[in-house]
Image (cartoon, rainbow, N blue to C red; front, side):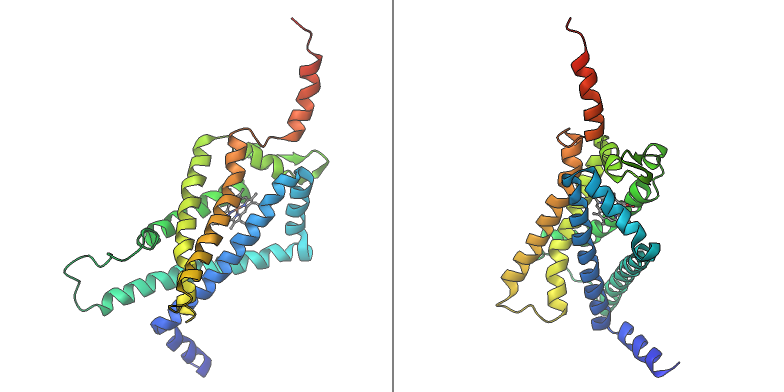
Length: 250
Ligand code: HEM
């Protein structure tokens, strides 16, 4: 093995090396979530803006852009999970004996939930990819933008995809757990990078909470406003309105 390989192996074998991998991939994933949420909020600007944005994502760098981003996200996601599992095992093995009593007395509810919220996020991402990226439901896959039938109607897909209250409930539970995971995880990133001191502890915890609440509201406002009928398909409405208006009075 060459010198670089040996250094990487030593880095990975140490617990600080794995913690750094968790922290750096965590930063990448939070960055992706902030970008994804901001893009999704274009739904409030209307069909054209959201569909333009989706079209741009799929055609940026002649279609290579999205694949580069996908590769980066998948690599970060997989490394984040593997390093976390490995760290947990290493920590358990390092404890020569189990504590006589539970050691979670001072742990916050979100830190105790980390493993469960993490597993729910994995299940959610798999479901979400089948829902909106692979589009296993032919009714969602076949939607075409009314202004340009050569491209997919992402706006119509969101409206149709969030009509089912059970699906919305699943998004609600998963994204709430994801945000609980982040509120603890963001503070841990600062801890690993050595930036959490007694002085910065409170502002860092507030920052973690603020980012989590922002993502929670930004993501969940969409399915909740759709399932409650506040956000509707403008094309359907504008097509239905003349028919309703032209109905003869009884
Ligand atoms: C209610 C909130 C969300 C909405 C409305 C939403 C919407 C969408 C849509 C429409 C797509 C497909 C875009 C396209 O192909 O044009 C997508 C893809 C994706 N979403 Fe979300 N999303 C939400 C939450 C999330 C969350 C919380 C995560 C991560 C935990 C996530 C991760 C992804 C990923 C990884 C993709 C695949 C991107 C790709 O490779 O094409 N999404 N989302």
